[in-house]
Image (cartoon, rainbow, N blue to C red; front, side, top):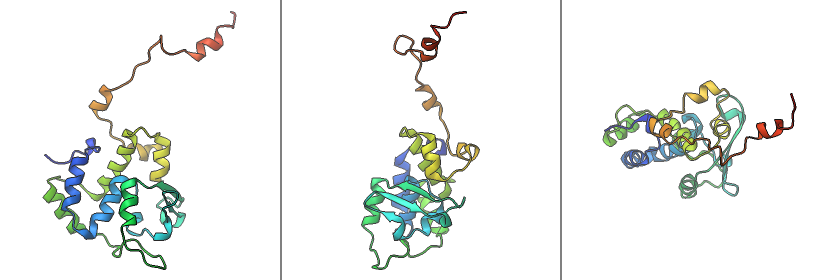
Length: 187
């Protein structure tokens, strides 16, 4: 069974992919799964952009597609990974190679049995997983750098399983404040 992009929260498939990746691409793949970043943003990441104290990644406007800076919180696994990497004294790029190793990635995808799963699909995973964790869509949109709702919606795939968990309004537990404020109005 391949990786179903509609079920992006399936971390078992991701871990299988991660294990099949050579060391040269493990970092970018890991970051792409957890943080809603574009491939170029990941490959060109610099140590100066990482704030370990406040646990943020700060991308300047010159580093983003829409030319607006953004702040992305560091997932604990990403923070741990980055702290384990050797850092040059004078900063610089996090990853030595900034050209994507497409063949190595495709080989890992094939070995993991994920079918047609692109690197960009990892960005979809990050965004969907943030939503499934209960984060507000405006927060996720800000983190991912989407300017429009239409672009952002393409990344959110709601499954039937999620729809089946819909919450219903229960009249006895909730007060309709609109009705309460209008109860004193006379016709």
